Every structure is written in structure tokens, then in C-alpha cells.
Length: 356
Ligand SMILES: Nc1ncnc2c1ncn2[C@@H]1O[C@H](COP(=O)(O)OP(=O)(O)OP(=O)(O)O)[C@@H](O)[C@H]1O
Ligand SMILES: [Mg+2]
Image 1 (cartoon, rainbow, N blue to C red):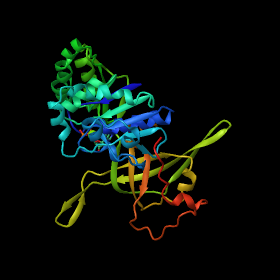
Image 2: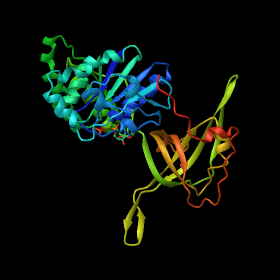
Image 3: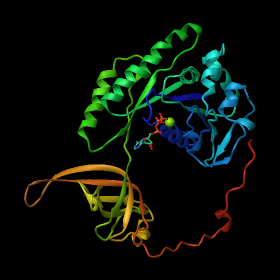
Image 4: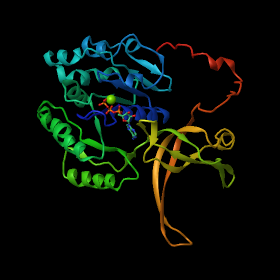
């Protein structure tokens, strides 16, 4: 069984997002995955819908050594993805562990109870230095640390996370091996050269640190934009691919306005238009739904393109958004009709399942 902790002494760098997504990807790939939410703020605990909610959580596991999985482990609606939720809202575990003789080792010693059932345990941690964080590191076989591509984040990474790893190295004398940290650069904006520079700088800065492994990959920033109107009728493109069904793409011309409060209400400052590309097998059906003048909410990755104009030879450039989702907002929409579901039973909540 592999135990992976997602750690950083800095808050808001993407620990929970990475833990939740990695867990779901692994479960989807057929591995049996247990998520453990060690953060006082139970963000990971509420990331996925649960179809079985256990009576106990991390508090009982750590404080009373509750080892019966049927009381500890909740089940998400994703197959093979289970969760021990965070229920230490008063932050009592930190104090308890500080006074317990086995404080830092408690979780490591408890891992044996999960070993027969799980391929991977993923632990989400709090964005601050604490004994809970040290306990998670000691229990881990792998460490992953998201970092955002900013100078301040790099400084905090060195001062906080790397220093912490340095400080707990003496545990080696007790036979504990501290894994090296895999650094994962998260939220890289695809349009900013500055971000690319910082990424290179991070790689140069940390390349000789023996507690660190630089990643071969990074996660682009997913941006959401508000209430943007579609400027032209959508355009459907289909791309044949041999014997397989053609790939379909809907191109929307969207104005991303930036309304700023003013005396007269709102004025638009610095908005821009961009082509939004939505690749989906249902794009042909959706082509009838998206309309010129409709307001939408676009979520996706922004790319920036430069080219020479064929007639004038001038340099041209434009933003393009590769959308993950384009949500229709209700403004100016007069009516909505939903397709009838064939199987009515799907409309009710799934029945609760007993734990294994
Ligand atoms: N690649 C990304 N692109 C855009 N937004 C992101 C990305 N990764 C994370 N976020 C957003 O950044 C915010 C912080 O992420 P998250 O909660 O995962 O961080 P965290 O490190 O767990 O924070 P905390 O220290 O408070 O627990 C969230 O709103 C999340 O949706
Ligand atoms: Mg978090």
C-alpha cells in the first residue's frame, strides 16, 4: 500500500484540489483509494457526494484508536473511492498529539488496518506547520507539494515546507525514513511569460536540494469568467477521424466584460472578446441551445496565439479559451424544457449502502 500526503505549509496552493482529483483518477483507474482529511477545515470531506456516511471520522481514529473500518470509513459515490472525514473542528487533535508519547507516529502505526483493503491512501493536510502535518509525513511513503508559480510562494516553500522536512530528519535515527518531496507546480497561467520564467526559476533554485524531486509536469490554471455574452451565432465544426465518430467542436464568440461599479451603475473596464472552443460529442445538439446574446459562464484554459496576417503581413494575436464547461445563465431565457428521463428511478437519491 502506498501512502501519499499532499503537504505545504502555505495555505491555498491547491492541496485539497490535488488530493481530491488524484484520488478520483486513481479510483477510476481501478485502484482502491482511501482519502484521509487531516485538515481542521473539512474541505476534502465535502468534495464528493457520499453514499454512505460513517459514524466516526479522523477524530476517533487518532484520539481513541478506533480501528473498525465500518465505523470509520465513508463511501463516496465514485466506486473504489472512500474517505475518512475530518471532524476535529475544535482542533483538539493537535494538543492531544503534543502530549502523547507516540504523537508523531500514531498514524504510521495505524496504517496496518488499511493495508488489506486499499492500494493507495491519500492524506490531505492543513496549510500550516503542526504536529498533525508531521504525523502525516511520518506515515507517508510519498510526499507531494503543490506550489504556485510566484516568487513569494517559492520563498515560503523554502522557509516553511523544506525547513520542516530538514527539521524532522533526525527521526531517521529511529528508523523512520522521510520521503523526498515531489514538487508540483499548480495554477500555471498559460498566457503569462512571467509564470514560465518563474517555473524555470523554481527549477533552477531547487535543482540541487536532495529532499526534493522536481516534477516533469505541471497543472495549468483553470479560470472561470462571469456573465459573458455570446456575440455571434455559434459555429459547429466536425472533424472526421477514420472509422470512429467524428470529433465535434462548438465555437462561441464571447465578450468577457469586466463590470466595475460606477455612479451610473456599472461600467465595463478592460473587457475583451475571445473565441471559446467547446469539444464535446453532443456539440451538435448544444449548437441549438447556445444563442447570440445569451449570457454564459465559461470555465476553461486560456491560450494565447500570435500569427502573421496573410494579406498585410502584420503581427496579429488573440486569446482563445479551451472550455471545459460553458454554463447558460438565465438572463433573457424565456423558457426551458428538459428531456424526459427513461428510467424514473434515477431521479431519486441512491439507496444507502452498508459498508463492506
Ligand atoms: N489549477 C487550478 N486552476 C484554478 N484554480 C485552482 C487550481 N488549483 C486549485 N485551484 C483553486 O484554488 C483554491 C485553493 O485550492 P485548495 O483549496 O485546493 O488549496 P489548499 O492548499 O487545499 O488550501 P488550504 O491551505 O486552505 O487547505 C480553490 O478555490 C481551488 O478551486
Ligand atoms: Mg485544503
